[in-house]
Image 1: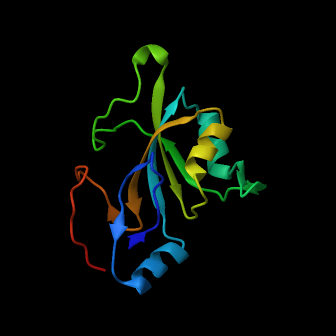
Image 2: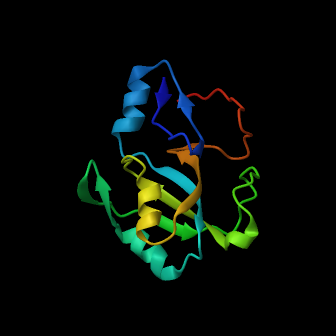
Length: 145
C-alpha cells in the first residue's frame, strides 16, 4: 500500500509498505512532508511570509486556514529531474520549498494559487527522514525503520 498520496499531476517520493502500523504511523503523525514547487511567476519575500503563516483555502467546500508551515525560495533545483513544463515565452517560473505537517486534498496547489502563483510542477522530496535525494523517476530503494 502507498503511504500517503500524490495526485496524478504530482511526482516524487512515494513510500510503499505492507506494514499497516508503519503506514498509519506516518499518515497520522505530524511527519513533515517537503515539496519543491515550480510556480508561474516570481516569488517575493511577502509571499513566502504569507505561506508561512497560513492561507485560507477551501477544503470540502468549506473555508480552511492552513497551519503554519516552512516556506522558502529554492535556488538549487539540480536534484529534480528535468522535464518540459512550458515554453519560456509564457513567463517566468520560480521554485519554492514548502514543508507541511498536514495534508489536505491538493493543499500545496491551493496555497500557491491563493497567493497568485499557480503550481506548474509539484515534487514531493521528503517524508519525515525519508528523502528523495538524487533518486531517478521509477527507481526503487528498500528502506528500514
